[in-house]
Length: 570
Ligand code: TEU
Ligand code: CA
Image (cartoon, rainbow, N blue to C red; front, side, top):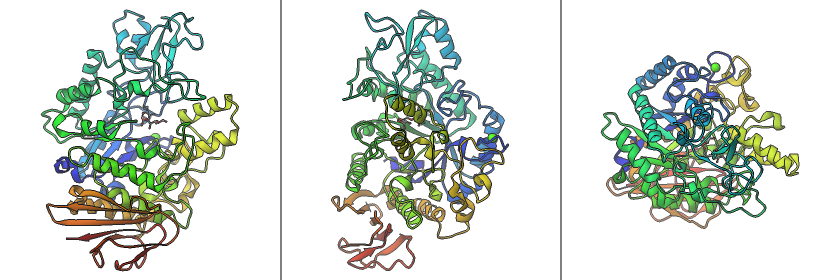
């Protein structure tokens, strides 16, 4: 079973380097900054660090647009700084996983400039996806794009290159042209680059939108949603026809027989449980685990991610439970509430008001970490960092938010309505600097931070929490330690209790091998909640509690606001 792999009981911590720690006062986090803060991560007890991209980049999408795969952006440091960080991480018994962004490159990558400038028939032309204008349309005019796909970052997924008279495909920004994976030379170049990083000593890869690399032949139009301008091409590029072949090939060429223990996780928007079970089936040798997106799409309406809807707990439970069961026997789940693309967990799934912030953050941590799979902690989540108080458009930096604002304004949508969506869902919420202490700029930088520090850092910061045994930080530390010592957390099967309850999240984990069973009870709300216990749990051992004076478990039991507890019996 995947649970028996070295990473079966591991917890991964995601670092967004730009916002983690700035060592030289230019206002941007960097590699030496990370090296200087490893104490914090060692104290937390995480096993693996995942670094968002640190490669040379024009930073149109904060480094997810790479112009050189085999170097470090001077903004973040040098290859020597990288080697030093890697040594320091290994020296503390942790591992380091790199971000691999190979669905697309930057338009400033030499592969692309050569592909563009050599024109049709040029030697690297076929490394990207070039197409002529739609039949009978004047190239470069509105609607003449080769197909109707919209980009994830607003506007069409095609940009016209006047010099060669053709369009190139970009599922993300126009500065992120999609590579043509149909071309074996592209795949070989990617494999060689990956081996180069493994030779340098890295321990694996988080693979950006890796389920989008295979596009349906012919690139057919997508369905245009009611009131929409662009087609939704996702059925033609999500888990496309050759994606399993490409990943199995990558495994053979890069990972098979490697002497070190590696970790691979594929980021997969739109992946289904059935597909994920195939990607993560160890017998198929594709990936160790995937990030799925179902639970972070439950609180959005038909108009997409900025169309904010209330989340129903019953929907959340049903979704996560389906993934637990669906990947129960062969596959493996990645577990996350947030990352650099999502709003902050405590603001979205908990309650970030002063009365409930710490408690709800601890509850969310407890629930997530008690599921079966590999938990991911996104920087600052362990402090209950919350969404930012963005006042106006000037406070935002992210290309997705800025493009969305421009598009919606042009459609006549009011400023306040647009800002409400950006405040709730904008990716910059996750990208405000890490809050190290209560000083100016939160100890993140001595200069001017590239994006404003959340003013709540005077109360919410790492220094204060490390000194307080009841803090959110120490709660995360205990949960991470529990995963290392309690086999039922790793191996136990998952059973959801009370699926129809709108405030109670309850489940058991049963490990037949050790005869251990865990019970998790969580009150997702700001009011007391009295619950009946399943049979035989009264006076069971309490493993995790985070409410002062939590009483022994008796039936019926009254959970305090946002209380969660973990019980154990053998
Ligand atoms: O994200 C891909 C992805 O599907 C999203 O989470 C994306 O940010 C969102 O759908 C936009 O609405 C990955 C990276 O994590 C993200 O930071 C990059 O911008 C994107 O790929 C392109 O590389
Ligand atoms: Ca810096």
